[in-house]
Image (cartoon, rainbow, N blue to C red; front, top):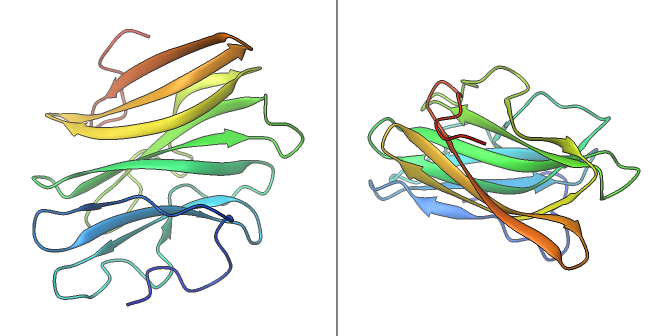
Length: 168
Protein backbone atom coordinates (compact mmCIF):
# COMPACT_ATOMS: atom_id res chain seq x y z
CA UNK A 1 0.00 0.00 0.00
CA UNK A 2 1.52 3.32 -1.05
CA UNK A 3 1.08 5.99 1.61
CA UNK A 4 3.05 8.57 -0.38
CA UNK A 5 3.58 7.99 -4.09
CA UNK A 6 4.19 11.37 -5.74
CA UNK A 7 7.16 13.72 -5.55
CA UNK A 8 9.94 12.96 -3.13
CA UNK A 9 10.77 12.86 0.57
CA UNK A 10 13.68 14.72 2.12
CA UNK A 11 16.80 12.54 2.07
CA UNK A 12 17.16 10.73 5.40
CA UNK A 13 13.61 11.55 6.53
CA UNK A 14 11.40 8.65 7.52
CA UNK A 15 7.85 9.77 8.27
CA UNK A 16 6.63 9.31 11.83
CA UNK A 17 3.61 7.09 12.28
CA UNK A 18 1.48 5.81 15.15
CA UNK A 19 -1.10 3.05 15.49
CA UNK A 20 -4.73 4.11 15.58
CA UNK A 21 -5.81 1.49 18.15
CA UNK A 22 -8.00 -0.25 15.55
CA UNK A 23 -5.33 -1.99 13.46
CA UNK A 24 -4.51 0.98 11.23
CA UNK A 25 -1.88 3.71 11.36
CA UNK A 26 -1.55 7.47 10.93
CA UNK A 27 1.40 8.98 9.04
CA UNK A 28 2.84 12.51 8.73
CA UNK A 29 5.64 13.59 6.39
CA UNK A 30 6.88 16.51 4.36
CA UNK A 31 7.29 16.52 0.64
CA UNK A 32 10.03 18.40 -1.17
CA UNK A 33 8.40 19.08 -4.52
CA UNK A 34 7.28 21.64 -5.45
CA UNK A 35 7.91 23.15 -1.99
CA UNK A 36 8.38 21.69 1.51
CA UNK A 37 4.86 21.05 2.81
CA UNK A 38 3.48 18.69 5.50
CA UNK A 39 1.01 15.93 4.60
CA UNK A 40 -1.01 13.45 6.66
CA UNK A 41 -2.56 10.06 5.85
CA UNK A 42 -4.65 7.59 7.87
CA UNK A 43 -4.45 3.97 6.74
CA UNK A 44 -7.40 2.01 8.10
CA UNK A 45 -7.29 -1.56 9.45
CA UNK A 46 -8.58 -2.92 6.12
CA UNK A 47 -5.65 -1.35 4.25
CA UNK A 48 -7.67 1.44 2.68
CA UNK A 49 -6.63 5.07 2.95
CA UNK A 50 -9.03 7.36 4.80
CA UNK A 51 -7.81 10.36 2.78
CA UNK A 52 -7.09 10.79 -0.93
CA UNK A 53 -3.95 9.19 -2.38
CA UNK A 54 -0.92 11.21 -1.29
CA UNK A 55 -2.60 12.33 1.93
CA UNK A 56 -3.91 15.77 2.75
CA UNK A 57 -1.96 18.96 3.31
CA UNK A 58 -1.84 19.94 6.98
CA UNK A 59 -2.19 23.58 5.91
CA UNK A 60 -2.92 25.38 2.66
CA UNK A 61 0.14 25.29 0.42
CA UNK A 62 2.31 28.37 0.82
CA UNK A 63 5.35 28.62 -1.47
CA UNK A 64 6.77 31.45 0.68
CA UNK A 65 7.55 29.11 3.61
CA UNK A 66 9.09 25.69 4.13
CA UNK A 67 7.26 23.29 6.45
CA UNK A 68 9.35 20.46 7.88
CA UNK A 69 9.84 18.03 10.77
CA UNK A 70 6.23 17.02 11.42
CA UNK A 71 5.33 15.55 14.81
CA UNK A 72 1.89 14.09 15.25
CA UNK A 73 -0.38 12.33 17.67
CA UNK A 74 -3.64 10.46 17.22
CA UNK A 75 -6.63 10.56 19.56
CA UNK A 76 -8.32 7.16 19.22
CA UNK A 77 -11.47 8.33 21.06
CA UNK A 78 -12.22 11.30 18.79
CA UNK A 79 -10.23 10.07 15.75
CA UNK A 80 -8.57 13.49 15.61
CA UNK A 81 -5.04 13.79 14.27
CA UNK A 82 -2.84 16.50 15.76
CA UNK A 83 0.15 17.47 13.66
CA UNK A 84 2.77 20.13 14.37
CA UNK A 85 5.65 21.30 12.20
CA UNK A 86 8.54 23.73 11.99
CA UNK A 87 8.11 26.55 9.52
CA UNK A 88 10.79 28.83 8.08
CA UNK A 89 11.58 31.06 5.17
CA UNK A 90 13.75 29.44 2.50
CA UNK A 91 16.32 32.21 3.03
CA UNK A 92 17.61 30.95 6.36
CA UNK A 93 17.26 28.29 9.04
CA UNK A 94 17.45 30.66 12.03
CA UNK A 95 14.17 32.38 11.29
CA UNK A 96 11.65 29.78 12.46
CA UNK A 97 8.30 29.21 14.14
CA UNK A 98 6.01 26.27 14.92
CA UNK A 99 2.46 25.77 13.69
CA UNK A 100 -0.06 23.00 14.25
CA UNK A 101 -3.26 21.57 12.89
CA UNK A 102 -6.07 19.26 14.01
CA UNK A 103 -7.58 17.03 11.34
CA UNK A 104 -10.85 15.21 11.86
CA UNK A 105 -11.58 11.63 10.81
CA UNK A 106 -12.72 13.05 7.46
CA UNK A 107 -9.39 14.82 6.87
CA UNK A 108 -10.88 18.29 7.21
CA UNK A 109 -8.72 20.98 8.82
CA UNK A 110 -10.02 21.85 12.28
CA UNK A 111 -7.92 24.95 12.92
CA UNK A 112 -8.39 26.82 9.65
CA UNK A 113 -6.41 26.57 6.45
CA UNK A 114 -3.18 27.84 8.08
CA UNK A 115 -3.46 26.02 11.41
CA UNK A 116 -2.43 27.69 14.67
CA UNK A 117 0.81 29.30 15.79
CA UNK A 118 2.41 27.37 18.67
CA UNK A 119 5.79 29.12 18.89
CA UNK A 120 6.10 32.66 17.56
CA UNK A 121 8.31 33.60 14.66
CA UNK A 122 11.79 34.49 15.85
CA UNK A 123 15.50 34.38 15.22
CA UNK A 124 16.10 30.98 16.77
CA UNK A 125 16.33 27.37 15.73
CA UNK A 126 13.53 24.97 16.70
CA UNK A 127 14.16 21.21 16.55
CA UNK A 128 13.24 17.79 17.91
CA UNK A 129 9.47 18.21 17.79
CA UNK A 130 7.53 15.47 19.63
CA UNK A 131 3.75 15.27 20.03
CA UNK A 132 1.46 13.23 22.25
CA UNK A 133 -2.30 13.10 22.84
CA UNK A 134 -3.53 14.05 26.27
CA UNK A 135 -7.12 14.04 27.53
CA UNK A 136 -8.82 17.00 25.87
CA UNK A 137 -6.18 17.74 23.23
CA UNK A 138 -2.50 17.26 22.58
CA UNK A 139 0.93 18.43 23.70
CA UNK A 140 4.01 19.29 21.69
CA UNK A 141 7.54 19.43 23.07
CA UNK A 142 10.51 20.92 21.25
CA UNK A 143 13.99 22.35 21.66
CA UNK A 144 14.58 26.07 21.16
CA UNK A 145 18.18 27.00 20.39
CA UNK A 146 18.76 30.69 21.09
CA UNK A 147 22.55 30.59 20.71
CA UNK A 148 25.38 28.09 20.86
CA UNK A 149 25.23 26.57 24.35
CA UNK A 150 21.80 28.15 25.06
CA UNK A 151 19.07 25.59 24.40
CA UNK A 152 15.70 25.26 26.11
CA UNK A 153 13.08 22.52 26.11
CA UNK A 154 9.48 23.71 25.86
CA UNK A 155 6.15 21.93 26.05
CA UNK A 156 2.80 23.37 25.01
CA UNK A 157 -0.59 21.83 25.66
CA UNK A 158 -3.23 22.59 23.05
CA UNK A 159 -6.98 22.02 23.37
CA UNK A 160 -9.15 20.57 20.59
CA UNK A 161 -10.24 24.10 19.66
CA UNK A 162 -6.62 25.23 19.18
CA UNK A 163 -6.30 27.24 22.37
CA UNK A 164 -3.24 27.01 24.60
CA UNK A 165 -4.11 25.20 27.84
CA UNK A 166 -0.83 25.86 29.65
CA UNK A 167 0.90 29.21 30.10
CA UNK A 168 3.65 30.04 27.61
